[in-house]
Amino acid sequence: MHDEGVIKFSTEHRSCPAARDRTGGLACALSAWREILAQTGLVGQDPSRYDGLGFGNVSGRLGPFPGDRGRRRFLITGTQTGGRCRLSVEDFCIVEAYDELRNWVRSAGPVLPSSESLTHGAIYDLSPAIRFVLHGHCPVIWRQAAALRLPTTAQDVAYGTPEMAREVRRLYRSSSLPDTRILAMGGHEDGVITFGSSVDDAGKTLVAALARAYQRICLVC
Image 1 (cartoon, rainbow, N blue to C red):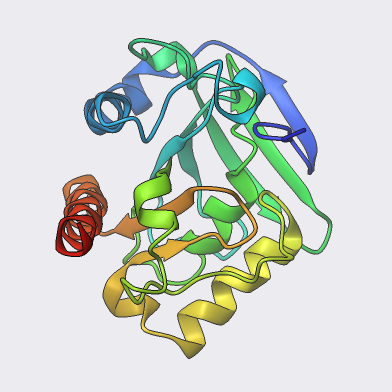
Image 2 (cartoon, rainbow, N blue to C red):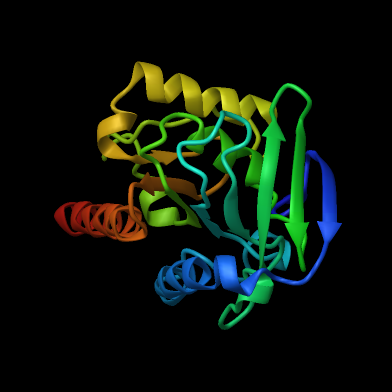
């Protein structure tokens, strides 16, 4: 059994309507790239994959900038929204604070935050220049991570955990991750994450990796 989409951290969530005036523009920018990821199968819900549970999520920073570590607010897709054809601002929530030592996330909005919220927070804490994070599931990239020379988290580290947050930080400090801006999640089947200063930067990095992976398949055919 897969545990895709299961929230593994403790949540302090305040249920409230979406703050359209503050988050509507960011939600639209994220939704546009999320649509592209859905069309390429990197985000979605498929009865034949991961026990039929939704997969993939996207997020973007909210001010003030740069923000203290652990309190770099961001807008993120809600848990189990992968199967939605299109998202609205009501499918996002705000992560206000997070703490990997406590395995804790505080959020507000109409939906609970994605199960990967702790990992997104850890990535935003790496640098104030990181403003967007995209997480997709791509077997083509994931299976060729070594050949593509992608920084990869340890196979015994599960998604959505404090260990994953620490593993991402280790890669950022000890590998090419600051330059590649994409990593494979060794212990999270098919999982890949990209980040950037803009949503276009993050999205293009992911699509470029997908193209490189298909090129390698072509070369060995």
